[in-house]
Length: 73
Image (cartoon, rainbow, N blue to C red; front, side):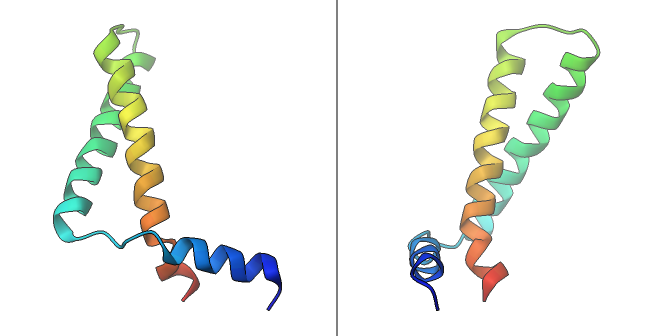
């Protein structure tokens, strides 16, 4: 195993897996962001919509990072 792969596997192993409640909360944030994106595309404006979009991106990133070890195992 190359050092880069070993380092990668070590790093993703440090991120805790999500519990069911975490998954639900992150999923809700992602869905809220999708709704915000649709509203923005339809011409609506507002700071809350942009905040929901940013929160959705962070939630998606967290969701992916927390599940990476399941993908490579």
